[in-house]
Length: 332
Image (cartoon, rainbow, N blue to C red; front, top):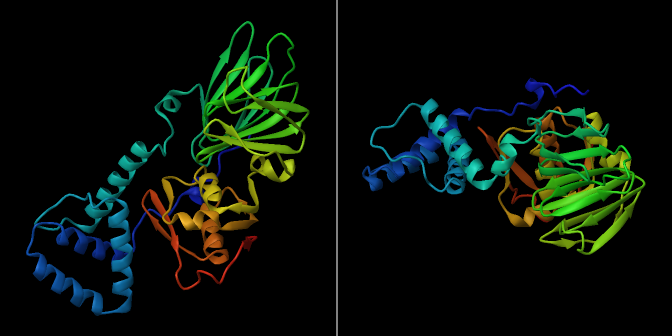
């Protein structure tokens, strides 16, 4: 059984730098009911005092915009630590509303792993399941079928043969049925991917047995979303399942997909703030135990800036580099 990744290594930075805290206090004052004109004049003086103040003001304004300007209004400012606490609370509330903790049914699932945790388990029929970080599923075994209902995360299944009871994984409305095999199923954002590592798997974008299906063989992968199956792709099973050994291998994966995968190893929510960034592609090998190092590598390889806040990581455009960098390559 694989031990959880080190808490220290997987833990994101949970503090704001002092200048950003100050800038957030100015944002609260601007929306507090005070004399706005006077506050704006004082804020401009503060920003003009040093270039770092203006940069902090830009970071605070972006955070305020993303959180909807919903920080409580006030007349007298609370301590900086309260500002940070309020942001954490707002961010956490947004995570529940936005589904960052998965659908409600996943909260009491039969099997779960925490963010950054990996483990394996053996089902009652002898089937082995490897669970990636942030994974949850229910187990439904009856006299004539074996089914896992995956809600979040990713699993690799090595199925114990049983001709009388077919084995399938249902995820996001579709299904993957084993025809005596081993395979990987992962939910990455809005799509679900199925990769076969041994033998054959029958994939449907709609779980009903009379729905259109495609058969995948070892080394093939397919994704489905919105009840539609994409094209079958050739894949490297060893690279695509490297997460089972604590590594992530990306070979030109879009940044939107990379962010969804990274969320399994980093607490809180990861937001790509500009949709145009989601298509940027990343190549490299990373450790699942060090999400901060991976973020550093993404920032180096791609024209993005990354702002790390309590329970919230923002991936934003770096306007000084847009158009100068193509597909990013990094190998920490």
